[in-house]
Length: 256
Image (cartoon, rainbow, N blue to C red; front, side):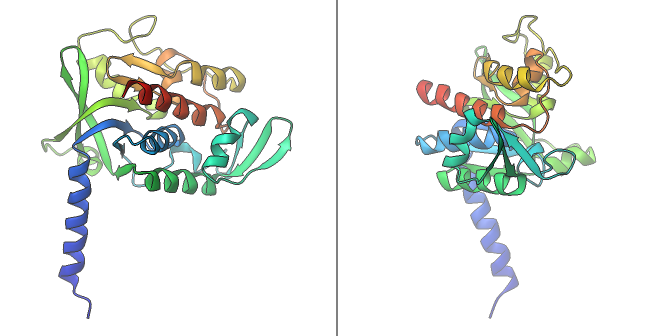
């Protein structure tokens, strides 16, 4: 006979065991969109201890909706090897334009990341960073519903060797650093430049170029990289996002 209290106890015990594993990691990724999921997958596959925090209930960022809720995405040829590794099916539309079902893409990216060893913690927001000796060393967390309700409840903290801001247009972690940490970002002005209007071809190139360490201990990936450095948005083409996640993972694997 099933017991309601045992069901509850199983959830509590397993969740807190998982949460305890996330208190000290090699990399903490903020944002569960495509670049964050890909970065987490490659880091975990290389044997690194990785946690991914997502403020929403769902994982996948803007990929779920494709373009204007037409749930198809476009990926250019350069990034197809990542779809192959993640076992995402795709079809050739014409030269250098490949389409994939956005639901399948998110599901596969999420499953591969978790199966590789990434701990995904959803409904958690980042409200601050931990700063030591001019370097980011951790994150300050709270439940997203606490943030949404405006409740005054103190947060908890986790330690990590590197943080990856993969929060997309919002650049959530970079904004905290810009506002609260008394040092310049590694941008031409020392500040967040803000994203520019759509230019798909340029944006896809700059997404990868702008993927870098923007502050000691803090990397940026995906659209967060373009928004930080002032690159344009790209719309529902996702090759640059995938390649950005792969790039930041490779750089951190070398450093770790």
